[in-house]
Image (cartoon, helix red, strand yellow):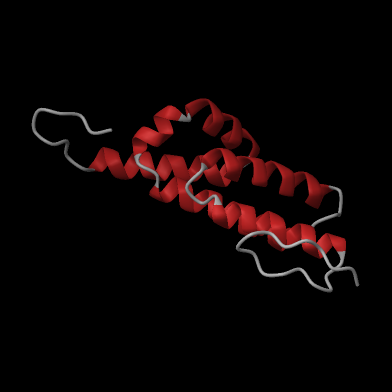
Length: 120
């Protein structure tokens, strides 16, 4: 097998075939970009396309989706507002993201607002 150049912070891809090296790099980007919705959406779109073409194992796409759902679960609601267009686009492509956003909004709606202010 070929040896591939290392990705900073990723495990070395020594002896891996190109498809496996690509999977490792994509997973590394998704896990490394856990707080960056743009990176996560790019990883999601890429992994979705590569799975559809048979070039990526579905488990890698599931791992990317898991990172994306973690962002939805942990991002302050103000982040949703700032990224509304990107999230709406993503919600059309991935129902689990839309469901996660809905759950966050329902959780927030059940809590009282602080006196005199609306939370972000």
